[in-house]
Image (tube, rainbow, N blue to C red; front, side, top):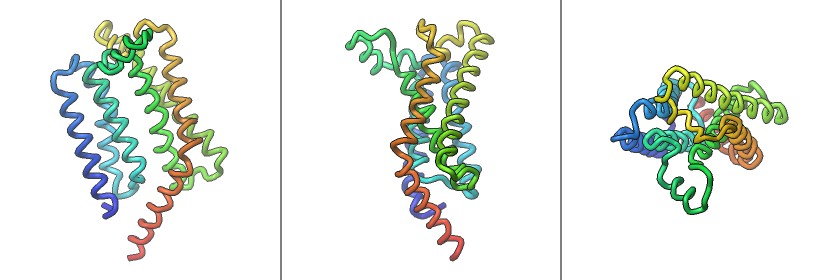
Length: 213
């Protein structure tokens, strides 16, 4: 483990664990909870397994932790019943609880930097125009795949899967979810790519220094 990353990673792992435990205590129902949190648990396993061969920047680890916490909150309450966003809905006379839009924004924003970092550091795609296009396409594909998963789970489980589907009566919910992820990936790449480049450069300099030693 890189010395510079140790405090950050231990803190992020602590936050991840605390929010996960909280979310598992008397959730709305354990079926929905398990469906919502399993991507974060799988992601944690992958990150632990690959850390020595491919440590990400601290920036990406922070984003992943935030995304995981969003999933845990959604799993605990269900996305349609997160209290803060129910209050926002009622206070502003909105038509629906929009916490799921937060989740789908993260679903586009966070994978954009995971994919970008892999493609750049593995030197798979270096031309910036192609990099932008491919990363956005990956994010949209992930979002579409998740919508397909929601569809099949709901078909297989019947009414038990309604909370996981979370359309709240909106016939365009699937399309709006994918559009949110698409816009989030574009927004992230437009405004945070320079910051991400600097984080990658610092990490690679440290990794080169460790190899040289």
